[in-house]
Length: 401
Image (cartoon, rainbow, N blue to C red):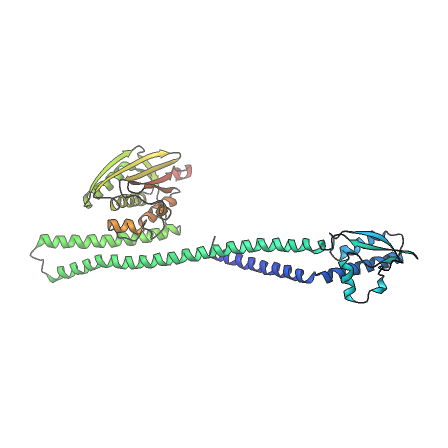
């Protein structure tokens, strides 16, 4: 989910928390003992007035109806009879001050309503505080839930901000590394062009040809880097059109192994196990993806490199596996190794003197995803790493097209 979603959700949760806390605090302050005493007194007064006009109605039912109007549904009472001659009897006319309401409430009963010349009735309140505790609990639990949602949203926003800061830092490092690494081939091209233009090598054709080779290699390196960045951008935005066909696996792999054997300074041994001879993919992009995996295997290995390349069938996927005997990848690094600008860990790069922009494995991931497949890694530090490209079998529509 996006940052804007959590910002909106946080605002809603904060509003809900403010409302519920306000309601909770307001009712806690408002529904005091004095107010409850007044509500019970008023309900009892209205019940006696209605009973005076119509004696056929049951008085407890009238009192309950009036309590319900005050939202005191859970308040329980009983109607008791008392002698009017009892010195403790308090009639309605005896109540003159607000303190009289509270005194009767503390004794859990109302004033006495005369039903004849010698007797009267009053309501004994069994659970005086039940009238508002339930409502307070409702607001309390609502507030707790809203606070939990608010805390989750704030935590999510913090994580998003941290991730954005990390991405910004990585991009800054990437920009620095890109400028630094591009500076070397550009300097070589510029220096070579100046030497060739000076005419100093006109009488040394072999050396002159070597300078031309250097210029061409450095230019191709810069072009390959530029194309890779553009391709990743197109893949991420779904703008790259793939031309998928059945392509032979063995010739593609053999061409790559010959190329890496020729250009690397390390002693590299390739072991091919081609069980599935054909794969349905865009040859150009798949070849570059496999090339990145082989390049990684050589970079992050010792001077003697053993690389196993396998093609096989797994469920409804055709897999190409590249396994090396290199330094391996830690479990923590495996979680981020396919992220853009990532290069597994600083220790891997420092030990092997590897430079680059961390685009290779991200390129592999985006290419496989664009084919409807996936890439996975299995590794053990100090022993090996095995990357697996899994591409699905073609649909009937893809075959006919």
